[in-house]
Length: 181
Image (cartoon, rainbow, N blue to C red; front, side):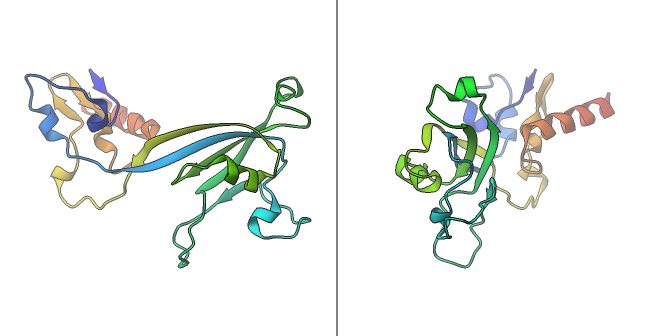
């Protein structure tokens, strides 16, 4: 059996094994992801205190390490794709785009109107989640969960403190597993 989920978030109880005691707790970065349908071809320059004629990028990344007490409202903003005219017409006039934004706090409707302009947000979907592990130094072997928890029980998230994406963890698991076979 392969367990491919953050163990302490699953609620799984492992009976007749000491496997659960081998998995150290892991802190995660709490994030909000918002998918926005907008007919704005880019974010509004006024949101960034720029003149209306300014061209704004369709991919914006922010950092919290600015030295300023003011924190950015979002970590990233990316225009993913344009909707077909047939699908976009369900939301109103113009060319509609799907935008994905990550943030530390929920992006409220008022803020989305500031970012994209009044009347330019058709719909927003939001998800709040524990996105990826907090990067902390690995100081001793017991900071990492073993990949093999017990006979026939493998835990791919044992790599999680070293690598923060499940896709990479699964590849690493198979590389390690196949190398040992």
